[in-house]
Amino acid sequence: MGVLLQIKSAFKSYGEQVLLDDAEATISDDTKVGFVGRNGAGKSTLLRILLGEEELDHGEIIRHPNLRLGHLRQHDLFLPGETPLEFLMRDSGQPDWKCGEVAGQFELKGDYLDGPLSKLSGGWQTRVKLAALLLHEPNLLFLDEPTNFLDLRTQILLEHFLRGYDQACLIVSHDRAFLGATCDHTLDLTRGKLTMYPGKIDAYLEYEKDQREQDRRVNAATMAKRRHLEEFIAKNKARASTATRAKSKSKQLEKMELIEIGADEPTACIRAPQVDPRQGPALRCKEVAIGYPERQIADHINLEIDHGQRAAIVGDNGQGKTTFLRTIVESLKPLKGDVKWGYGCEIGIYAQHVYTSLPDKQTVLEYLETHAARGTKDQTILNIAGAMLFRGDAIKKPISVLSGGERARLCMAGLLLSNYNILVLDEPGNHLDVDTVEALAQALVDYKGTVIFTSHDRHFMKRVATCIIEVRDGHVTNYAGQYEAYLYSVNKEIEDGERELATKMAKAPPPVGKSKAAAAPKRNEREIRKEISATEKTIARLDDQKRQLSSQLMNTSDQNEAMRLHNEVAALTKQLADAEERWCQLQEEELEGV
Image 1 (spheres, rainbow, N blue to C red):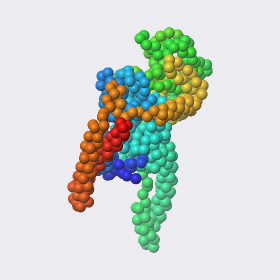
Image 2 (image 1 turned 135 degrees about the vertical axis):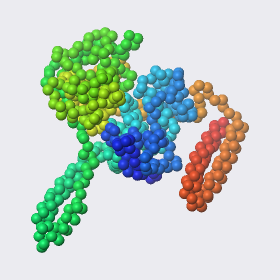
Image 3 (image 1 turned 90 degrees about the vertical axis):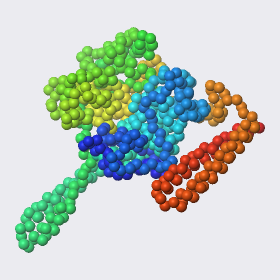
Image 4 (image 1 turned 45 degrees about the horizontal axis):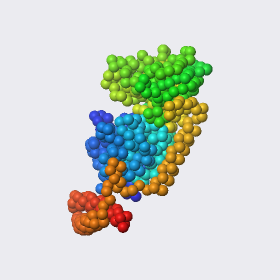
C-alpha cells in the first residue's frame, strides 16, 4: 500500500473561525474515500489546499512524487462549435478511438458524441468533463459534489465507473447513497479535526452515534464519581485523622476529566408546516402539452396527484422535469390542455427562480417572521433558522449580501415555517449537509400535506417518495410503484447497455491511430523501422540517465538533494515507460504491414 497524500499538523483559519486544527490524514493508493462534514466545516477549503490553490497557515501536505491529481472542473473548457469527441481529443491528446471508448462508459455516442457540445444539457456536458478527466489517467481523483445536478442515469454510470476504477478517490458529497455505493473509507471533518474511518458512510454514522452514547455514559459515570469525591473531601479535609486521605482524593479529583463530545454540535431541528390532511385529487393534468413556442417537450399528459402523496419527478437531464414543474405552478403556460389544482390548495414553491429573487432590503429574521404562519413562536423561527445555518448574528444579515446557497436555505426555511398544504420543491437537498438533508426528509415524511419534488439524492428519494412521475421521451407517466422499483429498472437498462457495448468492443476492437476527421495514411516499412531505431536510442539514453541518477540518489546524504534526485528519477521513469509503450506500438504496426 503506497501513500499518495499525507496531511500533517494542518492548521487553517479565517479570522476567528478555525477550519483545520492540527488535522492529520493519509490517503493511500488503494482507497476510495468519502469526505463528509457539516456545511462550513472547511471541506472545500481543504480541497483547494490539496489542489495547491490555497496554503495552510501551519503544517504540511506531503505528495508522492508520482501523484497525478485529477479534479472535476466546474467551469467549461469548450471551444465554440466543438463536438464532445473533438474536445476530448484536444484536451487529452488521445486518439479518437480511445476518447470514444472512455466516452462510451458514460453513454456518449452518436449525436451526443459527434453533435455540438453547446446543444447538450448541463448533465450531459458533465459527462463529457468526466470522460476528459479520466483520459488524463490520474491516480487520485478529487470529486467535489459530483452528483449535484446529475440525473439518476448519469449518477449510476459514474458509480459503475468508480466501482471498477482501480485508483484512489476523494469524494466530497452529501449524497449518502452515492458515497455508500462508491467509497470504502469515510473521512470526517468536524471542529477542525480529521477522522479517517475504515468503512462506509452508514457504518461510520452508526459508529459516531454509538461513540457519542458511550462518551455520554463515561461522562455521567465520571460526574457521579466526582460528586462522591467532592463530598468525601468536604467532610474529611478538616479532620486531622482523615486530612491525608482527603488530600489524596483531591489529587485524584484533579486528574478526572470529562470527554469532550465533539459531535455535540447544533443539530438540524426541522418541522414541516402544520396543516390538516385533505382527501381527493390535489392536481389534475388533462391532455396537457408542455414546452415553449418554438419547441414542445411533452404531450398528452394525463395524470392525477392525490392529497397526501409525495410525488418524485424523475428523468434524465434535458427531458423536461423543470419545464413540467414550472407548468404546474403556473410560471409557464401549458401549450395546450388544462392544469387544475384542487379546492383550497395553498402552494409553496422552492425553485431557483424563487430563491434568487428574494426581497433584498429585508434581513434574514424579518423574512422568516413575514413568512411564518400566524402564531409561530419565536423559538421555532430561530430553530428553523439555525437548522439552515443562520445562527447568532447571521439572522441579522440583509438578504442583499447573502450568497446563492444562503438564499436557497432561507427560502426553504420560510416554506417550513409557513402553512402551505402543497410544497413544490426543486432539488431541496442542494446546499444542505447530510444531517440537515436527513432531518428535512423526516419532516416531509411527517408532513400531512402534498409534496411534489425533484432530487438527485437517492437516499432522500427513497425516504420521501410515495409515487414516481417520470418525464422521458416526450411523455409524463405516473408510476404507482416505489422508488426502489424505478431504480432497479434504470440500473438494469444501464447494465444491459454496458454488456452490449463490451460485446461490440470485444468483437471489433478499434483500430489504433485512426482519426475520424481524416484517416492517417498507412506508413511504409522503412518509416516504421526508422522510428523504431530512434525510439530504441531514446530508451537506451533514458535508461542510462536513470541508472546514473539512481546511483547518485543512493549515495547522497543531503535531504534536499535526495528529493531533487528522486523527482528526476520519477520523471525519467515516466518518460521511459512512455517510450517503451511507443516501441511496442511500433512493433505491432510493423507486423501489421508485413
